Amino acid sequence: MKQGIHPKYYTDGIVCTTCGTVWKIGSTRPNLRVEICSNCHPFYTGEQRIVDTAGQVDRFMRRLNIAQERQTEREARRAGRQPEKKKSLLKEIYGEEAE
Ligand SMILES: [Zn+2]
Image (cartoon, rainbow, N blue to C red; front, side):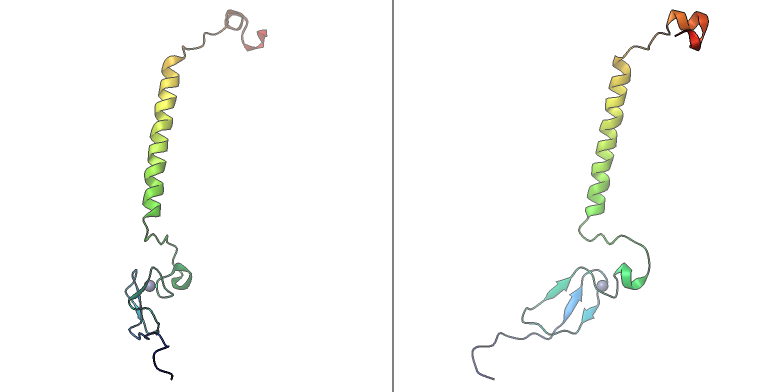
């Protein structure tokens, strides 16, 4: 091997941050971390679950809650502003088939 041209080779392995498994793989980069591996990925484990390491599900649920609150506020405002529609006098007298 020629000296001085090869990068340093690390053999500590790759660590999965979800399940903590250390995979014995060599690399030219130290302290490699992965969010998911075949030991904990739902495809390999067979269990149905959402892998949420970046908090994206939480973020989505928060945004969904805010959107729903705004929707109910808007509906309440709309309901408060519009007066109840009065039943037409014709309908009141002759029933629904009057028109
Ligand atoms: Zn894992």
